Amino acid sequence: MKKGHFIIKVKPVAILAFFLVALLVRPSGMGDLLSTLNTPVKYLQILSAIIIAFFAIIYKRQPNLSLVLLLAYYVVVFGVSYFIKKSEPMFAEACSCIALSLFSYLAYEKHGDDLIEGYSKYYLFIIVIQMIMTIFGFGLYERAATGLFSNRNHMIRFFLPGLCFTFLDSVDRKNNIWTVSSVLYAACFTYLILFGASGTGKMAYLAFAIPFFLFYKRELPRLLSVFNCAIYSAIAFVLIHFFRIQYYLDFIIVNFLHKDPSFTKRIYIWERAISYIKENPLFGLGSYTSYANYLNGNMHAHQYWLQLLISGGFIGLILILLIYFIASKNLQSNKGLIGSTIITITIISYLVSGIDEALTHSEMLLPLLVLASMYGNSNEYFMATVRRTRSSLFHRLNDGTKGEKNARSQPSKNIR
Image (cartoon, rainbow, N blue to C red; front, side, top):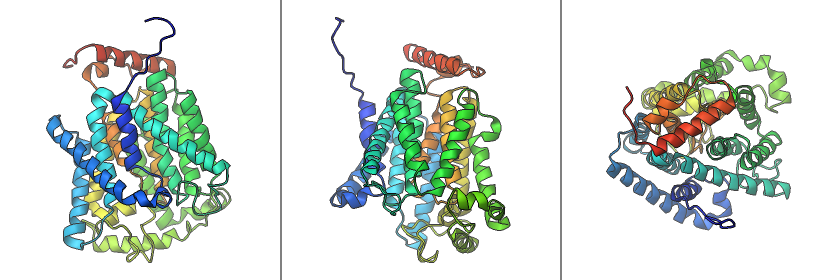
């Protein structure tokens, strides 16, 4: 190739991933800003889910257990909703979760890098727009509406996976966690969350930042596995609601998080939700667009585990916990990869946010768990060549990149 010639490499999977996530995961204020597009977008979302499901069926690959459990969860919840409670479930969110999970399942094995690149570029695009709107006064934090978002608490749930994908993309493409894209995203993310009015967002930010800077150069301890942290978050809720430990930490809750010890009256919503869970323990109440009729005018339970119980009962909760367990087990088996650390910390941050938020409109959380159950396992040769005992970031990135390149250039082997 002659000097001075430029080659533009077209990556169909990355482009498809970008537009698919743009269609399925939108900031909460986009519906108001572009209200005329709401109906066409809804039909396009349904169509995209049907097309992806069709390709998943004809592809005839070994099914992913996390994906099967995810589908089973929605069968249970929507079955209760349609056939027992005759409710109007949150169809759009379920459609997005299923479509993104199926697409990640189809694309990851052969095009994992392109998949993550497409996802990361979309989130980078949105966070830059949100940052510009904030700088020029269109995202004022003293108002409920903040730029592209109709709810300030939604911002952390929306941008968390983007932080994860941007770091993963930097590692995959540049063999370095700090690139122009990742630094830009991290800087915008830090400003929007730390200077925002969401106490939940600040706690979730710290839940990402502290373990990230402590462990990005070494492996996460088993105590911080995804499944263990899911249990910790449930225990934290029990301690807060039933033992009122927040009153011993009111200096943090009031001064830093700007909340009152009742978590802005959430404890009364939780009591109401628990009463209905006791009445419907196995299958819950089903999925509703709003639970206002049950929760004294509140749209949801304002707590992640309670929301799972009230919508899907203990059957639904067990299915979701199994997904966490499978994702956690795979990430632990690949804990020598920096990407496993990044994904784990992102999910932990979600769980911290879920202590006093229902995590509704977190369309990328379940797809991220499905991706976590596959991460590092794109082929058997890569699994056999990556060394997980290295503590140096340089060695982990170097070995991981070389192992992946070798894997792509050699046929897959059965490792015994």
